[in-house]
Length: 302
Image (cartoon, rainbow, N blue to C red; front, top):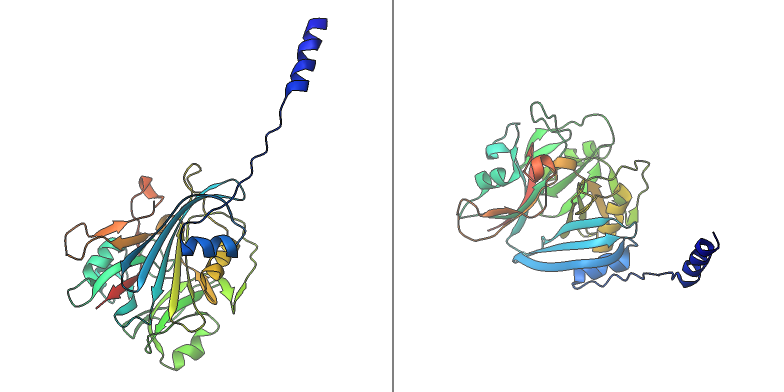
């Protein structure tokens, strides 16, 4: 008994306490904005930025969150002041009907020599039986759906003047009456309003897609975060999305469909090869397979 007590005492005296100090060190300008504008980043493992084409910059960041969770996010910064760049709504087979189709296939149907699709994301929530969107839906000035399902709803739109904006369901009737909307897809909760990040009671952490707009409507910020995979990426809260959008430069922003619908893809070649559209994130369905969705947003260039 005496010997055992001595060993325990010696162990207690020799035991060292280790303190790990994390420091997030971004490598890119987008990474710097996020680190300086939020308190979400503990350590950055990879921070890459690349030009998709003139007017479209993409960024991918792998990091450890302040909560100690593995994370991976994907970002598009789109400059609508560039004369060739547009954001358009997409649909299955590029038709003015409702249905469900993978975003890379929707992109293929919209792609052409005159207007190449360079990148895209998923859009609105939808009825998974028939592909009817939950919110408003406009393509090339044609209103395909002008109502919202129940719940907190919003929409992202491109006006006929080429500028982007987001608004709530309550604001929709007066905006629609002006005839300003050219392209639009619906969303859910508002994340940033007039430069302020909104609070939300929902505490679920999920894969998500969101979109924000600068005060002048010329810059669009798109963020997708992977989730439901503990060792790879865990997802975000609504408020965390809002802080990221604000840090990037968004004056207003909303949440789009997420979960297994979250899709972030780029064009990897200017030609029209069958595999020209490349998924960059990890959709949660069936171990990374794209989900068929109702609509989305495509970034195009003439």
